[in-house]
Image (cartoon, rainbow, N blue to C red; front, side, top):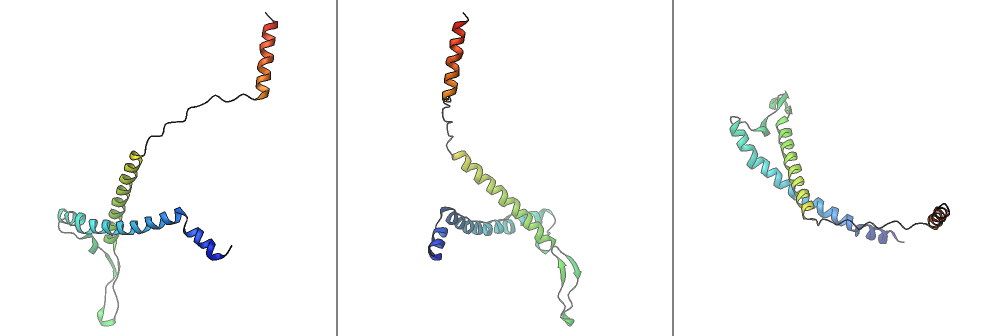
Length: 137
């Protein structure tokens, strides 16, 4: 089999295509959640906390020195807080989507349980047992 044919079979499997669609939709969903957090959720939180903008929160390890062309070195923990909030929102939305999909699935009725078919040995042993029971009466 040629390598091109093998690659075509691999790429056209349902799982690979589904994964690609999921990644693309996930990236677009990530942008929506980022906007939701930055533009809708964080401003009221900043207002409640007295105008604090978490994106600007940082711990400066070394201040910038433009005269010596030294850039600021800082830990931007505010961006980390925003990322945690985004993650929690995404996780909650995924939870709701999965829950909705699971509730839409039809409840599959369990297959009727049939009695197991006895083996030849079991049939023979049953006949022997019955004959012995008759002989003792």
